[in-house]
Image (cartoon, rainbow, N blue to C red; front, top):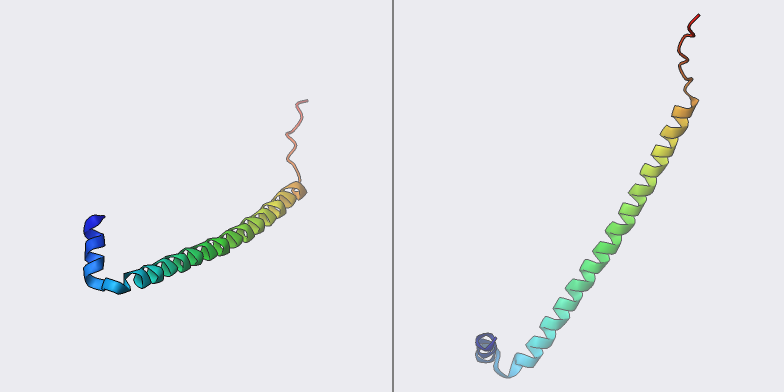
Length: 75
């Protein structure tokens, strides 16, 4: 950590606090972007799950409409 701090002071000098603020803002914007992407994908997943549930319910209804096979009775 000290080596990185020393390098920062040597490279940026008096501008180091400004560079730190800009870096912090960049990181926050990046995190916000990731959160928004996560929210978008969750809503997409929810829609796909809902669609698959509807498809499954339709298949169940179709299966109920199919006549059942009765085995022949033994005489």
